[in-house]
Length: 393
Image (cartoon, rainbow, N blue to C red; front, side):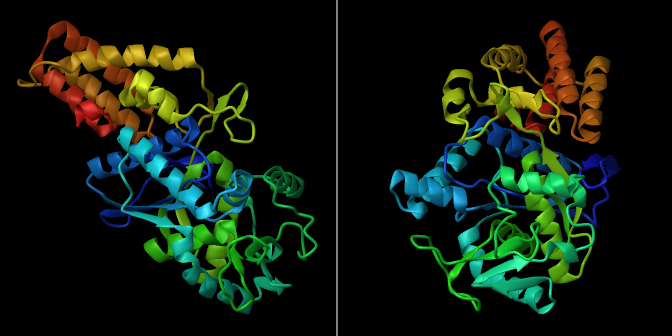
C-alpha cells in the first residue's frame, strides 16, 4: 500500500514493522455535538484500519478525547454547567453517532484526564534536559531548541505566529522566553480544574496530553498518527518536538496522515462560526450508509464544501447500490466482476482513494443489476463491507 505522508508531502510505500501496526488518531474536544467534519475524519481512519486489517495486519488503534481544554472549559462556563458533565454528555453523543456510522471503536479510547499523572514525568524530563522551563507555576517548551520545529507545517516564523493567534494561543504571553514556546503546564486559574504537580497546582497543556497518551499506549515510535488537517500546526508539530525531546527517539511518527476539512457557507465548519451540519440531524433523513457513501466520495486529504443537495444526490446513488445487493450471492465471479473488484482494491491500495473505489463499486452494482450474477453480487457486498457499509457486513 502507498500512503501519503504529510511530513514528506509524498506518497510512500507503507512498510509495517512485522505483522502489526500502531495508529493514534486525535479525538474530539467534547464541548458540542458531532458534526460532519468530525464524521469525515473518523470514517476515513475507520476505512484505513479496515483496509490494513484486510491486508492481514493487526492494527492497535488508540484515540483520545480531550476532556480538559480551554474550549471545553469556556463552553461549560457559558452554559453554567460543570465541565465534566458537559464532556460526558458529548462523549456519549459522539460515540452513539460514530456507532450509527458503523465506525469501529479503537482498541483504546483514553481520556486526557486519566493520563495527567503520566504527563508529569515527561514534563520533568523536558525541564531537566533544558528543553522546558518553569515560570510562575507555568511550564513552557523551548521551541527554538528543537531543530526544525514546525517543519511539517511548511510555515515560516510569521506564518506560525499567525496560526497561533488564529486558535487563541497567544505568542505574546509575557511568561514565554520566545513567542513560539508553548505551554506544557498551565498554572491554576480561578474556577478551573487543577491537579497537583512539582511546579504547583494547575492543568496540562493541550499538546502534552496527546504525546503522553500516544507514548503510554503505543511506545516511543508510532506507525501512523493522524487527525484533521487543522491539527498539523501547532498541535502535531508540538507533539513531535516534545515527544522526540523526551524520548530521544526520532521519528516519533513514521507516517503522518491528515484528513481535509469540511466547509459550509464558504468556511470551515466550526462552533464559533455556527456553520455546522450535525450528524444526528442528517442520519434520520438520509441514513448512515448514505452519509458514509457521501463522505467517501471525496479524496480524504482534500477539503470539500458541504451542500445538502450534494448529500441528497449521493443518497440517491447509494440507493441504487443498496438495491443491487439484494438477491442470491452464489456462483463464480465474472470477468467484469473481477475487473471491478480488482479496480476498487487497487484504488484503496493507492493512498486510500475511496472516490475511485466507490466509482468501481457503483459500476459493479450496475453490472449486478443488469446480469443478476450471484458471484458478482458477493464481490459487491464484500467491497461494501471493506468500506464499512452495514449492508456489506
